[in-house]
Every structure is written in structure tokens, then in C-alpha cells.
Amino acid sequence: MVGLVVAGVAVPGGAHPASAAPMWPVPQPYPVPDDPTESLADLPPGSEYVALGDSYSAGYGLGDRTRLPTSACVQSARDYPHRLAARFGLDLTDVTCAGATSEDVTTGHQFTGVPPQIESLSSRTRLVTLTIGGNDADLFGTAASCLAISADGPVFSGRDAPSCESTLVQDGEDQLSVKIQSRVALGIADTLAAVQRAAPNAVVVFLGYPAIFPDAEHTPAKGCFRSALDLGTLAGSFPSDTFPFTDDDVAYLHGVQEELDAVSASAADAAGVRFVDVLERTEAHSACAPADERYVAGVSLTGSSDLRRIDLKAGALHPNGRGVAYLTDQMADAIRELAG
Image (cartoon, rainbow, N blue to C red):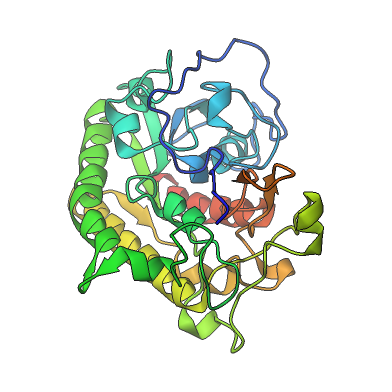
């Protein structure tokens, strides 16, 4: 079996050595105007806005990298925080980082020289946005390990397992479900409480994850499988924008997303924080959908010529440009309701 090495998707920074970003001009495809076309009564232009969260907030794979808070975070100036700041004329501090967990937001040093994200907050902060929880659940790392040879399996990694579900559900107990209902739920709740303490004067908006995997209604009769391997792979090239998941795992991983979404919504409700739930509204736009309807990119691989190493390219299973534009609009609607 080919070993799969995931490149910077879900693995928390932890011991990765990386220094804080140097202070040079950040690319600004969405410059913040002094006199924006849209303004908010409770968030006038120049209000302090801090963006927290993981790769879904950081615009992983979109280009125009900011190198902030460190280059290892793969943050993009095309992420939804930059777009929101431009739309409302806000003073943005964007500390989003690919691979971030709840702990990295509150207390952890994801990379050397990079403080916990929450240290960017203060009593001056007027708006906070975040997306978090997916890496706590290891949703993306699990998805990466579920890449399959065919719609019926086996998966690339997993000792010829027919599907990821078959390895994660043992004797009727779903290991991911147990983790989501316990450690993940607690991590999200603790993060929201910590954010509210650190930014007592801020509007806090918590964004959920869009559908990566479709529900049954939006799964084609012939399934979603698009192979990540073809004859060109023997020469070291791979097809792009594929969806190499078994039929069983598409349904299973969508269920995992539903559970994470429900836990996130419950934590937000208990904290009195606005949760922008986009899962159900994006089920027709998952990575399984037709190319011109997808909000989430499919899987593109790269690897060594002998195929001993296979990596996911940046942006795999993350919002594409169309998806980030949609998420920006959903967040803008919520912010208007809270601060307009």
C-alpha cells in the first residue's frame, strides 16, 4: 500500500519549528477603504476586528499568502476575514492558521514564536470571527486517510480496509463520534468562553463548516467517486480535483460533519454566540457536486516518482474561491444583524 503523508491540512503545528512572520507589506487583493461603501452602526469604519481559527478561516490554498502570523500558517489575503474587513472598512488583525485546534486558539503555541491566537484580543476588539473544531475532531486528517482505490475500496492507508468507516466503528462504537461528543465539544465551549472573556466588548460570530461530503439527497445515483489515480500516475502525475472516497465513506463522513455541526451549534447557543450554520445550505455544493457548483475543492495529489510519498495539494477539501465568497456573504449577513 502507498503511504499517505498529509501536507499541512489537519496536523496541529505543535513541535513544528517556525518563526513569527517578518513585518513586510501583506498582499491586499481586498484593500480596506477609508470610506467603505457599506458601514455598520455599531461597527464604524476603523473598528478593531480580529479573525481567529483554522484553515477554513485562513483561506488555505487560495494564493496571495500573507505569511502571517507565520508562513507555516498558509494564510491567504483572499480569506473571508480580509473580504469582510474590506466590505465594512474594519481594522483587521488576522491570526488564522491552517491546522489550528481549540487549544491553539486559547493556550497553545502552534508554532515557535507564535503566541496563542486569543492574545490578539482585548477590550478594544469590536468584532471576532472564528471557525474551529475540525482539527480537534481530526476530521480533515481522517478524510485524508480515507482516499480509496475505487468506489468499493480499499482505502490507500488502512491495511487494505474496505473503507474508513470499517476501521473507525468497532463493535458498534464510533471512535470519531465519541471524540466529538466529549473532547471536541468541551474544546469548542472553552474556546468560546475564553474569547468572550478576552474581548468583552466584541460581537462574536462563529462560522460552521460547509459540506465537504454530500447528504443522501445530493449524492448521485452512481455515487461521487472520481479516482485520484490514472495511467499518468505511473509517470508521477495525478488527476486534479478528484473525489476518491468509497460510497460508504461519503455517507459516513457526512454524518461526522453533521455531528460536529450539531455540537458546534449547541456550544454557541450555550455561550450566547451567533453560529452561522452553513452545512445544510451547502450540501448541493460539496466536493461531489458538478465542477461549476462546488464550494469546496476536490482532491488533487502530488507525489514522488516512485509513489512512496503522496501528498494532498494545498486547498484540497477546502473552500475554493466560489465557496469563500459564499461564506463571506453569510458572515456579512450575520454581522449586519448583530451590528447594523
